[in-house]
Length: 250
Image (tube, rainbow, N blue to C red; front, side, top):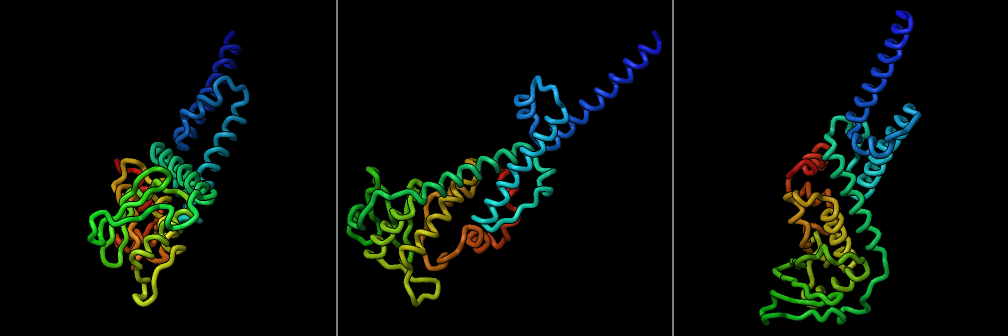
């Protein structure tokens, strides 16, 4: 009887240790809730651990490659080990939203010519303008060498962006960064894209999100990625630590 109790207790301790290890791994990876819902009732614990590890690595790897290609921000997977679960969720959600915006950019547009948006001077002072896109009226404000489009994040098609920028240029051209050449619809649309991607990526409670909803088309930002615009305006390099700081805001 004692031998039976000994064997039973020994096996129980082994299972308890295994379960504790599972909990530690799950907590460390920040996937506790997902793990419980996905693997409840699973018989193969080792298989479950492997799947959790692969899933978490896949999420971070996907985020890493996307941020590197779109924002020039490199992420080391190991560097996220100490990141809180909520921050990781924000990162994943931001990447998914930015990808959706990226896909919309390449869809077929609805505009054929600059005249389609009916850009017009609201008060006759050459500053406050309005135009119509997809049944909605937008405001565009012109100051010297600068067009500001209010709620520009709502317009998510690259070809239509170019046509809208063509209409703005016809009304008031904007100098390029060398202050000799002039900006083109293509490079204006690129800057607009960067703002849209950043707006989609940033959490709703982030203070920078409000600064990306209205694109400013000016000489200084010609040809710059969002990362470069951020660094120029803040004087800070957009590293993974800097990015995570914005993910944690709010």
